[in-house]
Image 1 (cartoon, rainbow, N blue to C red):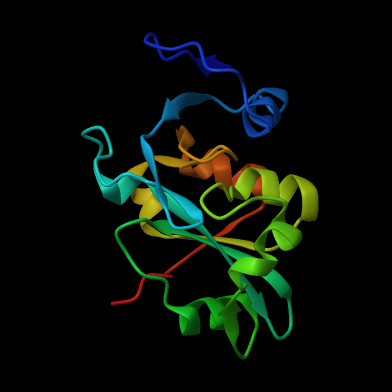
Image 2 (cartoon, helix red, strand yellow; image 1 turned 135 degrees about the vertical axis):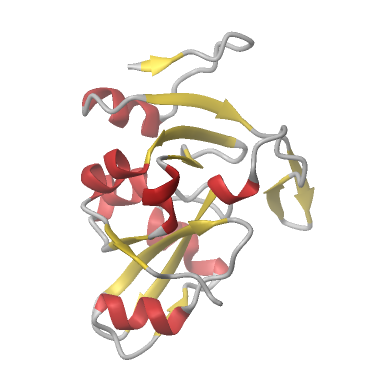
Length: 168
């Protein structure tokens, strides 16, 4: 199902294999990364792609739900109060970095709604703007690797809820 990026033959990540298995169309993409202390991060130059369609996967914990996931554009900030309300929690807090791998199976910078849902079925919430944008980029489970896919296809696959999550 993947539309191969002509300039590279990337080995499929587990997330891409899950997308193939579920017949979800996607495009592989690789972003440059850099080391920032003990964390690898995306480099600011996103290869000419509008940052507002590149999404980050944030993992939080709620007093009612336990772990949950917020998916928002990388150039915005998550409003934890909005996520708490829409998810049925009184309060949500970011999962500490030291607990991230244990909670999701992914290191910081590689968290992906597809892989997290496949392993744990945590509740997932995607910012409303993704629906308007159509195609968005999310991590494919490895630092620097992403997939471009339709936001509604992603939401259907991971049983996500669209909600207003952006801090104003």
